[in-house]
Image (cartoon, rainbow, N blue to C red; front, side, top):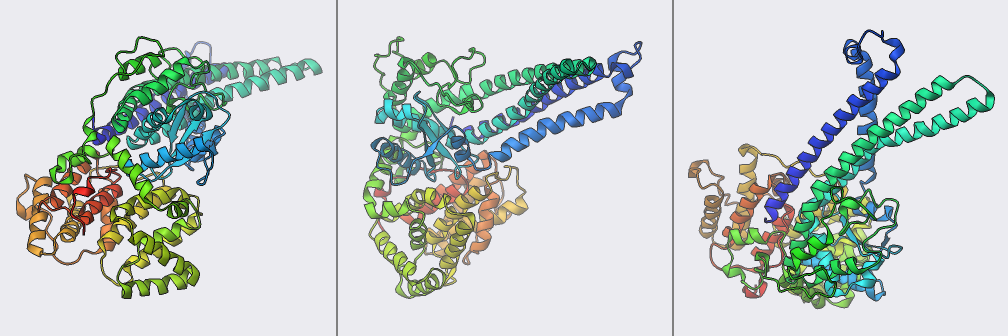
Length: 640
């Protein structure tokens, strides 16, 4: 199952969750109406059955149904709204502490290095990193609505008990959940279960109220027994109805979660190219007295997100995770149930291609297969990139004050005349000292390989995320002004600005538009501009660019006659329209995105000479479509 199939599966799971939620709500509403009708038996003649009486009194049924729906749907909406901060909100609700960017703790530093390497290898913005310092069990989770507001959290036990390979296996498992679209579904599950749980909580509240009323009645010798009994009966009924809903909600959670854990384990093996890490982590959980247990009161609510079951006990049917022994044996068939067993060898997965194969040997289908599937070669490549960056620049990327200046430096033109005009703009907006700092950053970036620019953007994101939204919007607008200052298209600058805009937009509005089928009237002009832009970026000759464009058209629309296909645009594309085009194409279904990425790849491979610019444009446009392409073999590409 590749990235696009996993995205389709996530969409199916979301639709199934909605359907099951509606079914559970209908059952609860019917049960509440029956209880309410029974309590109001004095209004119903004894000879009239309860079901008939309810049918004859639609106003009563509508009122009870409305109140029940208001409680359930309102509670779910409230819970989801309370999680609008994304993964950080979830981590902090469990007592998580953010790992400082400049941490000197060796275990936290190791964790940050592993997460940053995995993010660069996956072509994702670096998530926020948290440690649950009061949790001694071995566990972890990833949470968020989008890749931009994601957070990865590990327990202190994970840091203390695992070696680097094991930690890398756990983090790779969590990145699989980020890449596969599991996080959004997990937060929806939290909201769903909270809404159903609200009925049970209301029942508990009424039971407490009934006990207090009963105590007051006995103390004052008043005759309030019938009212107290009604409150107690209603409380018990709502508690039982809510408990049934919670029971089925847990079954839903278990059914949705278990198979995804096997998939995430397999993905972690593919990412790291060895199963010793993740299998070793699971074995240590099995051998540790506290195992993977989470002591926080909120553990049950997020149990489906965890690396391993965080609860002390759950029946096999109710558990959100497969049994540890089954997960270990899936990774290591030689496992005999003893923790000392050594993991077996692993056959490299298909995602291990890419760097080793060389860009010249890739085609559209192979590149599409690399999406969301980084391998150990990509992780090693990412580690090398981090070592290539100057220490001072890494420190700046981790600083909320300096990181925006590094990003602005990415948009400075290397030509003196254009750069001088940009620096005047920066001086007017930020002051002369800030403009000089940005110029110094640009000179440092000029000494680095050009393919490091996208990783620089990804590494800066935790610092950008901590800025107020007004400042993020200010720097994004300033970046647009820098790119457009000379009314000419610089392909590299435009692509990086587009990725920055997507990351920041996702952070500001984490609930992305629904993926849906788009009309040809909207899609074809967008494809014309996108393919024309990409073709002319790689070809100075208009005729060769047109040939590359037609090849991509053939790949995307093999059955359409030429007259009905998107036309080639020889003039310079409108970048403002292209920004809107990428937003539109981002709403395509996964299968449409697969065909799009294959066509763009075949376009840049048309002349058998792939330059860094073309490959980085492909990766940036893919990121704009939320298709994370790992680094490819840029060493095999002729340097510009």
